[in-house]
Image (tube, rainbow, N blue to C red):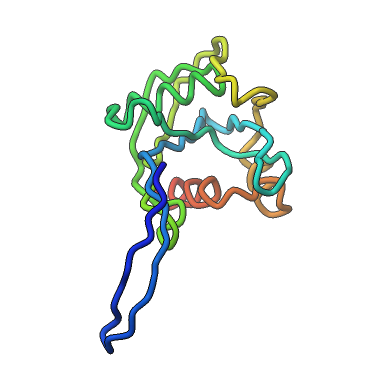
Length: 159
C-alpha cells in the first residue's frame, strides 16, 4: 500500500493537494448455489465492529496473480469452499475518490466444502450459509453494511 499526495491544478489555475491510496487488485466472491449463499463475518478495525460480507481480499505479496486464481484462493482461504465453476461478473472500485483499488466480482457455484486456510490476521472469521431472502434482509437491516458486498450482489441481480 502506498499513500500519494499529488499536487493538482484546476482549470482556473488554483493549486491543490489530492491524497489517495494505491492498493493491489482485489476479488470479491459471491458463493451462490441455488438459493444458498455463503457469507463471512469478521471484525473490521476502522469501525471497531463485526460485520457479515461476501468473501473478498487481495494478495499484497502477489499483486500480479491471475484474477480467477485470486478469487478461487480467497474463497478457499475464508470459507473452505472449492468452486466447480466461476464466472466474472464485472469490475468495481472500492472508493475511487480515495483509492485506485478495484475488485473483480466473481460468481462461484458448484461449491464443495473443505477446510478454511485463514491468515493470522483473519483470526475469528467465521462463515455461515444463508438463503437469498436472508441476505437481502441483512442488507436492508444493516447486518451487511459493506458497500462492496451490496454492490456486487446488485451486479449479480442485474445479470
